[in-house]
Length: 135
Image 1 (tube, rainbow, N blue to C red):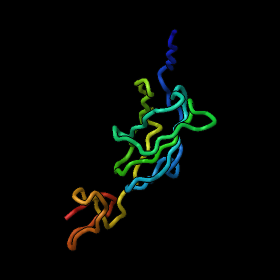
Image 2: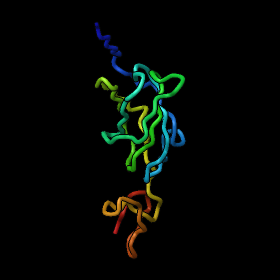
Image 3: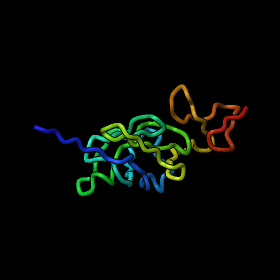
């Protein structure tokens, strides 16, 4: 009796869709994104965003080797990059042009690292530009 092993070439990410053209993704997470490419495998792939696992990764029913959907984790920052790890361990890194950005804090707010959310500027301070607190 012989056992057949199926292997795939290294995966390749060619397109990312979601979050209003990949910008303004919700800081609290939950946005669905679709990764398009090749050699993702029939199932079991993982998707990472800047090294953090995306939730609910699913292979497309009609084209599992070329399309993945995942739910973004909570996060912040600009130009966050994707990677895909096949079930057998081969990794693909999306080119920088396919990164996503989380929403910035509004003017009058700052990125409160303690809370992990945007907070209103304290009295006597201001933020003329998003994410910048000045005294």
